[in-house]
Length: 68
Image 1 (cartoon, one colour):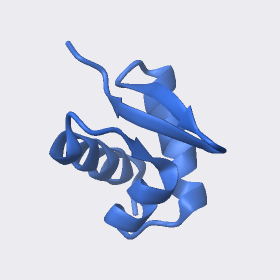
Image 2 (cartoon, one colour):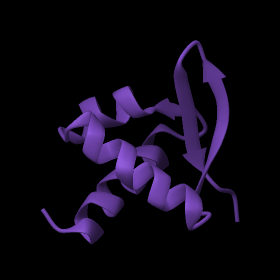
Image 3 (cartoon, helix red, strand yellow):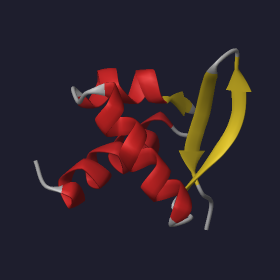
Image 4 (cartoon, helix red, strand yellow):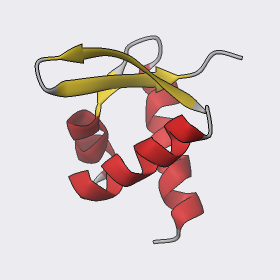
């Protein structure tokens, strides 16, 4: 799967779940991608300021789309 496809899947998932934030684990389950893959692309999207980390729940980091 190409990187742009993975990014789009993650962004689409977050868009659909808004305003609820999602963990990497939840995103992996929803996109049917491996947790490590999702983690990598979440880091890329966060660095690109497309998504933001909202909070931590135990060890889980929660993310949502950055509001324009």
